Length: 465
Ligand SMILES: *Cc1c(COP(=O)(O)O)cnc(C)c1O
Image 1 (cartoon, rainbow, N blue to C red):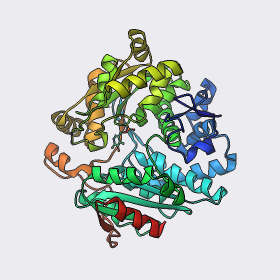
Image 2 (cartoon, rainbow, N blue to C red):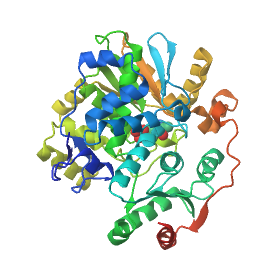
Image 3 (tube, rainbow, N blue to C red):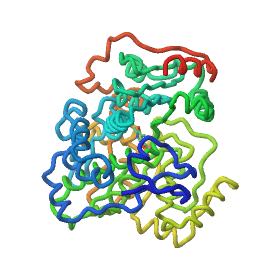
Image 4 (cartoon, rainbow, N blue to C red):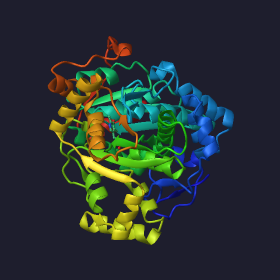
């Protein structure tokens, strides 16, 4: 299995070669040369597999340059009851016949990013040890991604994490979760400024090629292929637990931001999983809804701040991978679309291409704050299940656009406990912390407060990297 760039100008590489890279040298994203296939016989075998067994069966198709026993060990160490709370890892909850919630947020930071990042931490450590190399991850977070990255990388050999966050602007839960980590390879930097200031500093230091090379800077962003591969697994898992035979189809509704989660569903479908519809659910930042309905992709300059904040995006960083498939991997067409995007700020696909999008099974919708509140309330009342605001976006759109007679699986991307304020607004009381988190850490907070100044951060990193 080799990987090529969506812009078509970078040499094909192996999995291990792209693992620690971000964008390809030509600015594109890596995708497999071709999608591995899962035969009906294999799908049948998955019906009785445990989650780690299934994860290995899928991942070994994408990762063929790590010895089988090593990959199996890392997968087995990642998907454990200890880390994800249950042996099922991603529990499937049935609300009623034909309607399910897939619990993807049982990991250490209570959001679905743990599923891929917990594996990524082990893959990174393994790859670095093999080359006797080191990596310093520099990132910015407004809450969720940063904590998932820290929990994935804590205590890992050869890796240090420098995570910038806006001073005084995170929820008490997020702050405790990140700052109370005692691992010596985790450095929390609270910046006196906004999340945008944090991002600007990370960007400035990453653009300094000399500094980047000298201090071996890397990132953990959502375009990393290993993350997408790890996310395809739970689509297979949900499918084999919802159906009895491979003749049945299932639809998925996915709260979407950077298009990583739902892209994994599309790839599962390309691998042969009988998926009917992939429902793109957005919040008020609905650039993806606009594209899937009209064929126009128009990133926004301003991002609305919403009550499903992990979906507040201006552009969808993984979307290019889907467009590459949509245009049948035609490099000339890709160039046309991306030139239009660069010069006019948008592109519009042709009628035939829009037909193809429909043929791929995509449906879309968006919801607003009041929809989230109403859905949280009604799901709680009707099924006695409390869902978080992101999951509520998925359920709202899923119930609106689903086809009758096709089972619908709504992906749960975070736990309600993370978004206490919105839950209180919806149902008049605070969500409970999952029992494993009954008491948040009493450990002292480890955080350095710095001015919103790239030089100050540069000094801090260079003294500790
Ligand atoms: C990241 C995230 C999303 C969006 O996932 P994408 O892969 O970016 O589309 C949705 N919900 C939660 C809670 C998230 O953390």
